[in-house]
Image 1 (cartoon, rainbow, N blue to C red):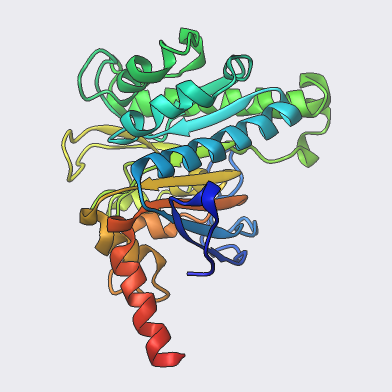
Image 2: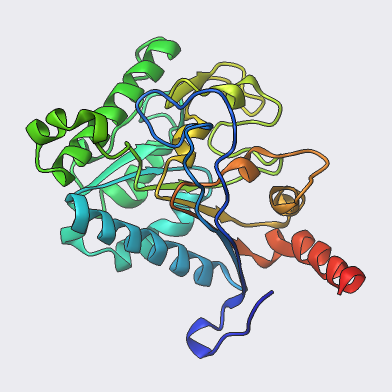
Length: 312
């Protein structure tokens, strides 16, 4: 814990920022996306904040998201974001609806960090949840959110989703570089393809998106999007961003609440965890920001307090 805070931040209990990190070492970057392990890209700083209330956490997370959106729109004219489901839509949608400028929302292009291989009308669909809670109330057009083609077989659905994501990122890069012709003529020196932001949660086992502990999906370095057909958490069939694609992002924003996540949070921030968790492998090229409530942060804070007493 590095500081105390005044009245405007009374729900914020503490902030810790770790320095930028060198790139991890692995085989090859994800197809078409910067930030694949081994691409030489340094990882940005990792910050965590702990909040006393869900409202304070939601307000801060939305502010960070809108800050990233404003920067992306100013530079490239579009904000390409991948969001997660679970409890996140219910927690953040009200604050997003209240705080997001409507003219900014028209520039958003929304993908899913992971999605169940079900129709959008299905109760398990994360995009369906986002559409009901946020996209429709905000008046965002249907083309602004890209869903998974549940009618296709799972491998083809993942391939098509990757194609759509990469096409959107190329369009954004072309807009920043002076148009498609200019981007094509400077292909070798073009800026890498990156999501502007990835909004992530974490399960009690430390999984994030559909990247599960000790699962082969964590070893995928050749794709930006892949699929899982044996998820340990139902439903079994899912489409997910790969770890290299997440780590290529300008911002990885975690929203984690509840005491059931406390052990995994501690493991995610441990220098040498007994069992590494996928969420702890997320170190975005730009920056990684964790917004935690007190119960989720409890074991981490206890471990750090014990270390402080031991080592001073």
